[in-house]
Length: 120
Length: 147
Image 1: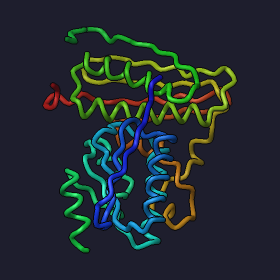
Image 2 (image 1 turned 180 degrees about the vertical axis):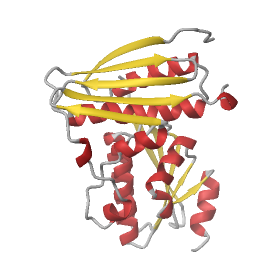
Image 3 (image 1 turned 135 degrees about the vertical axis):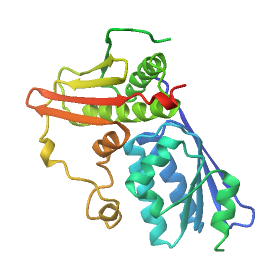
Image 4 (image 1 turned 30 degrees about the vertical axis):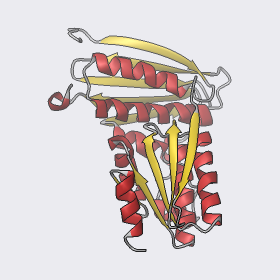
């Protein structure tokens, strides 16, 4: 069963934010890759991280548990986490779990960038 | 196009192998498109089915090694059953997850599977015992959103 997962990271040249772009099914392995990328960015000093899920339309509860770990880390560092391009099902799930109280949700990556920079 | 007068059934057996839950979602999508469910409803069923499958993969401890999925097609709704022949669990002992407690470190980050199924489906019923676990989930077709 093909469940390939890829990740890309785009950093703001001025160091104000970073975007983690996912591609594929976010299961335990996909979640771990997102977690590793986010933790590296936090270690580098980024306090504003955007996770772009445009190419990840399926996520399972194990993958979401990794996102919760990232939220926990961002809370510790007083950072700001945002998601963009969520499907309606993923947004409904995040809302049900309460994630949207700790992370912002935006329709597009551009909106997310403007949102995380709004309080810069 | 779906015009059946009588309920129909689709059966699928998947081995307990990582990511095999995605095979189940492909079948679910084909069945739900046949039934003219909306894209959003199809997406919800796929996510609930994934949770039911990985629950069996991770917790059943099944020696027999398979998960048995059935799709019962009716005019107004889809009924799914997800069955394993593993160790079973006490359904009353599954704690309700809390994000606040998880972020406070007082409960594990995981444990969302059952509430995800409940939030995405119209009805979820779990029978579990020493002979295994059977999850029955229902999704009603929304006429006004059918595509």
